[in-house]
Image (cartoon, rainbow, N blue to C red; front, top):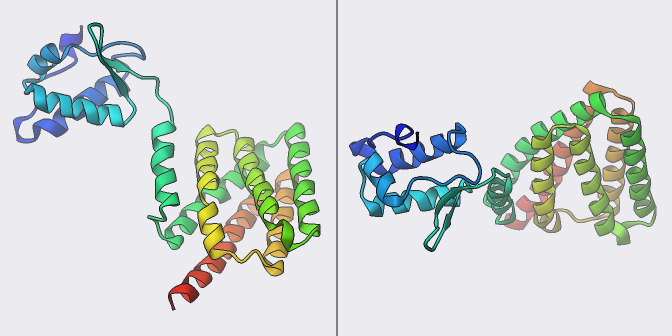
Length: 245
């Protein structure tokens, strides 16, 4: 029964408690996708809160992507299917607005991309080996054409990183890596020169990582991926210091 899902909100922090109770009911599976929350009147009575406080709490829960508030006679708060869209938008904004430092982004990426490469090396299939080799060959073609092909080379670089995330067979890593590489280009444009040295080093790193993953060398693949991120983060940090120095 819906009436048993809610209790009177704690009066010393009514708003936060109302938000938490609604979230808990949804996240605990007591209300499923497509089901409606009680009406505002009923929910207000169950929680012992004003309509204004309740409406604001519902807006917060809606912003988190857990419910959709529909208007009209048959409207109300309806539980939405859970998705990574809201989290993706938040992480994307942090990266695109450069609200996180290069140091923090590098630290995060070293851990994530190192784990991804290790898992990929452990779980890669024969078909996925062919996919990675094909992408590396494409990267080599751009590399051999020189710095004029820096941007298309970087796009293939991103494709390799995202392929590794898929090959890890962990959808959470896939989501994180895709979000990072969809939005990190602003940092590359600002802090990487795209010169011959960077191009060659980037290609050699990719080659070594792909070789390790395809050879199912779990520890080596993780170490190489972490070092690759660390190295290019240092390049960007050095460029950033020159701009502010």
